[in-house]
Image (cartoon, rainbow, N blue to C red; front, side, top):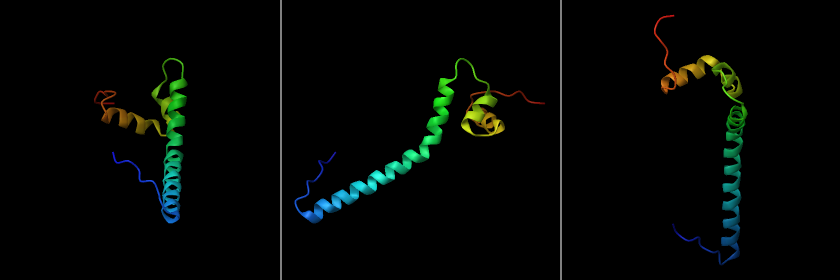
Amino acid sequence: SEAPKIPTTLPEALRLAADQAEENLRLIGVIELQAPKVAAIKRLAAAEGAICITDAAKHLGMPPSKLFDWMQANRWIYRRGGS
């Protein structure tokens, strides 16, 4: 990767500082968007032993039917045909 350019003038230094501040704000936004997902994963990881799919869905903040559908679509579970 290319080495960062060191500012040599006040305007260059101010632009670099502004660019860094914008990037920091963008990254904070990404962290805030991911925080609920991270919290849900931490709750699931802290569960001792097995956890049923319905409880896992509750921790993830989603209806159990959606989790079942996702798991089936990603071949984590298999459902028999019929009722």
